[in-house]
Figure (cartoon, rainbow, N blue to C red):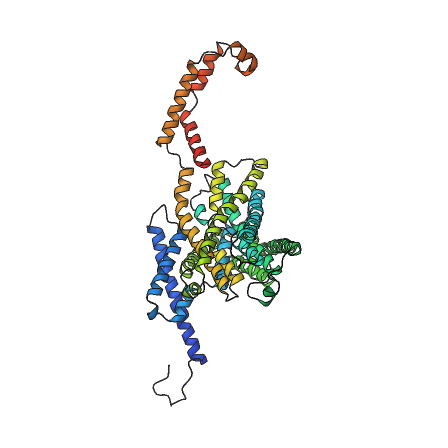
Length: 526
């Protein structure tokens, strides 16, 4: 803007630094204001809209879709730079600013029985994710009709779609009434995301990111050497990421011990900044920032929080819970808006995207079952409390949804290229994430209510109770077994005086509880 009484100056180009800085500030302010307005509306709707088919995640995604449609309808009145800022998912912003508060809050609020179930959680979060990764990548490479996918692309998609989003399930489960199930779903969800990021990092270290010169040189190569390279890189990244996180957590504990008398805000800043540094330095070193941050947060929760003042503990937990809540809302808003990016859709092949989405959804259902069932069987071998078929269905369902981690990872690996086929892969990933978030998320509460709630007046329960009563009456009227049958089956050798005692015990069986149990078993087996 020129001053009204300044002497005449030569005209400046639109690209001059002052005008460019002012324009950038205006665009950033407008974009942030739109996102802030959507967040306020989202918080109000989450509080006031009570529906079994709406979770905070799919509500934010629906709001993002609605906002994206409105922006496209009125795009002639919206500046192109603002439109691109709102409709394009920035993976760097997500990984650097939005994801760390979510992971840190999860680590600070781990359930009390997390360590007692650490073996099962690790098997499901690491072993199950590796099984899912191998199955998805193998099926895509062997059976896919899309010849545009090379081995490196299949491995990358296997890692990308191994990252689950169990937030919707955790909102229904209660840590008090179902501590084992809540602990398994919670712990597996966080470790699963970290393992998926480590797997993609291992793949990108052996097969460079799509679009780079190195990827073009060896993208079609494969074989056992590359397979062992991915395995070695995975073990290396996982191990050193854990060590880096534990070291950062130990630093927090040491500083809190050596500096008594800190205020609540200083304690919170110390925990937050060192945890965030562990995330950033791990990424700079080529390790997994998510895994490092989660291990650091576990150390802080277990050893640092008890050394803080009561006000410091409350301030730290509330502050990072608030940041995590805001970050989750922004993430799902952008997932919805990014699905309507016109530039990406103009480069997408619908003939490839639609069948790819169908195949990916099928692979998600199948790979999740292959990942859950073996690990649950191992848990039942050594666990004190076995997992029932109902628990298996809940754990399986909790891992069917995909979230912003998958979106960020697909941009991380495929966003370096302007190839139309890679744009198709990105679009397919966005569609699968939206479908699982909206469809599976909407069905989460009704399904878990069916599996977890007891309904005494349910017609099926009443019918089973009636049939059990008829069976008990028939047993009471049944004559004693013949002598030859008693000789074949010694357990049937009952003297006549003992038979009334058996019938009396049978009459005291709580048939309604048996009927409810049979009903639950029938629901889970179907």
